[in-house]
Length: 244
Ligand code: UDP
Image 1: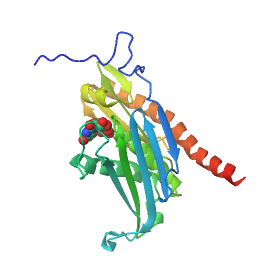
Image 2 (image 1 turned 90 degrees about the vertical axis):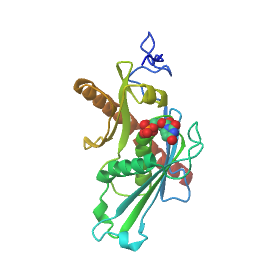
Image 3 (image 1 turned 120 degrees about the vertical axis):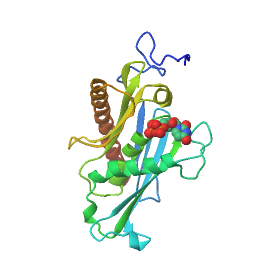
Image 4 (image 1 turned 180 degrees about the horizontal axis):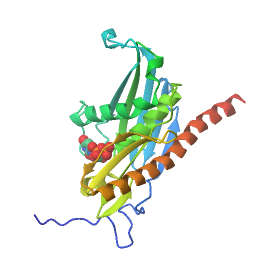
């Protein structure tokens, strides 16, 4: 089927939004943005705007779901109806249920679940505006919200995708690149432990391209990790300044 394909990389090797292949979108992260949650964080990554709120450890209801030897981490990824161009139904879609599961599985290895038997830790993720790569930005924000809630962890979890568009391996795909490109590889990492907690692939890549994409995503994760730590530090510097 012949179809006119839009160029995703121009003659200068730049992407639709002017980025170089290995460049992240502009990122802004803030910690402790919600007064009524135990922990919270907000991330803007390009046009993505995502809030994460954490409650717990707290009593789990219904009680029969409680586990005698560890806490139950519950995660809800939700897209606001106005977060995408075509109104999204507020009811949970299959995609949101799947993303809630993969985000929970990406966060779990960072936590000491056995510290809080018979309790629950709840993570609520609200995507206010989406432009590709929301699962990764959600993980980055949710891990910070968990840290903000004072929940002990082995390391922060940070996530970033890499992929292939127009035969070029690129970092941090936005929606158009995600939809019109050849492949998308989201990666979540605990950088201090050098442990990957999420690895997915949508599309087709050769083994060589896959390795290149994973390494590029890991580089992106490490850059965002520095911003994550800075955002966490900034909250406590602010508190100290207010006290003084
Ligand atoms: N998207 C959309 N409507 C939907 C779900 C997703 O327009 O109901 C867009 C949104 O911009 C999202 C992108 O499709 O970020 C890519 O979605 P994907 O399932 O690949 O997850 P993500 O890349 O956000 O982790």
